[in-house]
Image 1: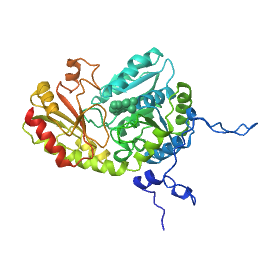
Image 2 (image 1 turned 45 degrees about the vertical axis):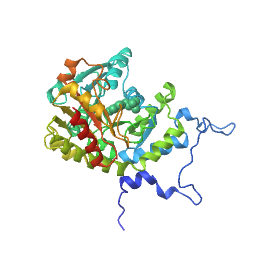
Image 3 (image 1 turned 60 degrees about the vertical axis):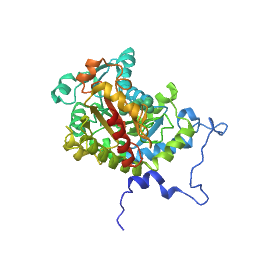
Image 4 (image 1 turned 135 degrees about the vertical axis):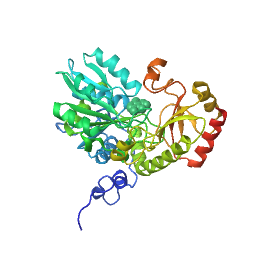
Length: 385
Ligand SMILES: Cc1ncc(COP(=O)(O)O)c(C=O)c1O
């Protein structure tokens, strides 16, 4: 029989199924140990959980590497930790980073406040203006960073184009793929060198862990590991175990997020009190054609503008009974937040409006509840708006 690569559900559940032996536990144990016994007089690798070589840390990293089609992967203590360490692995003082303007607010602050303290120059480009990317490259540019799909407008970036640009310049392309997960998009197959995740979101999927991940070439992941050891960013074994458990259902969860996302976005677009819905699966979305080419699903994130603005949004939020008002995303339970108080709080109202996020903008993370129940709840919210 011809050998066919295993699909994502099988990879996430089994990793390398051939490696298992009789009497192995079907569910892995949690190795809740900070340190491991080593042989006296031996120069063999020292096992220590801060080094990222605890069995739970290694198992979950191996699963993500397979899912992303990467040589290697590593999990760290948060998504912010993953973003910071991935950049520190490829940038040095005096280097320049060119970032997309459309990024998570915390990442923006990391670049503008922290990286600049370390002598790493950062500038920002508008993804809609291709010429800007070329004109903002410097002799010292060593990396490009983008997020796709973006938060909260769900814009989809043409990674193939950016991949060619980065390769032509000999610089690294880093992609935060938190919203897509490897089920909907695999950046390394489109020219990215390094994939970053907030594993707090879909990878774990149950709103009970803070974690991050980096996937890419083994040499880059080793650099991240060295930085992780020294900056103390290792993931706790129990959190690693929870993420491995979460990953086993990633493919089925994303299938459902994709279905519910499209159904709810389509329904919302037909509601009279809704001014605009941002969802890449809708023909009205500016990147609909690109999303159809690049993504295997639109995901569970929906941006929503109400006709009545900020006051209407607040009335809507107060009336909801099922969708919880909380930051974060990607869990089994539906959440809603206002970017002006969370991810984009650092921007002024004018800056947010210019970025297409007027006050009253709602960001929905649709969970795995029945879509009809979510629409009933949102109808209650809209009636109050
Ligand atoms: C796209 C994206 N990247 C990174 C992060 C940071 O992740 P964490 O909260 O796990 O540090 C977030 C958090 O909301 C995010 O939305």
